[in-house]
Length: 151
Image 1: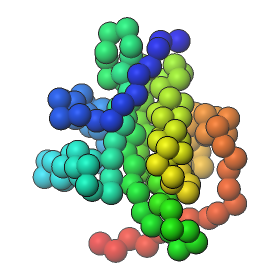
Image 2: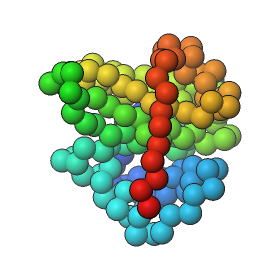
Image 3: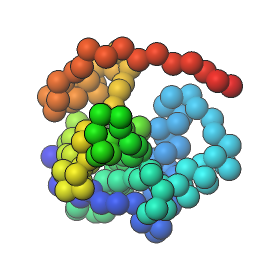
Image 4: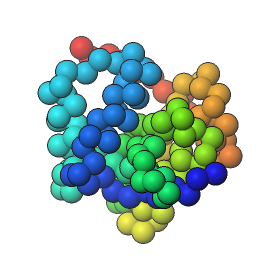
């Protein structure tokens, strides 16, 4: 297993982020306009915005191998913020090497340091590879999610 370093996204990471984000979008069949990608980059790069991103690299050769996008938001049952892990992507060539675990653990550590109340996420019920990792890290909840497409 390769040693994995995780840190905040930096301006110099734009091309690495573009490659990882494009692969994630392609995997889900999402085609986003360049303007939307540019806006997402602006949001996750802005320290004053309620979104952020972590990027994972192999320690050996500094190859970018994963990303995590997260959103902070208030909560009605606490004055502390909640963190929603919106996107977690690991380069297919790096899967099984602990990258996803390191990204989630880094976000958990950040939440504890910053006093967040909870980190949460969801995944498709049939995403067995991701669920195998998630089930080792945390317990699954009984909540059911409902979506209303507004456009």
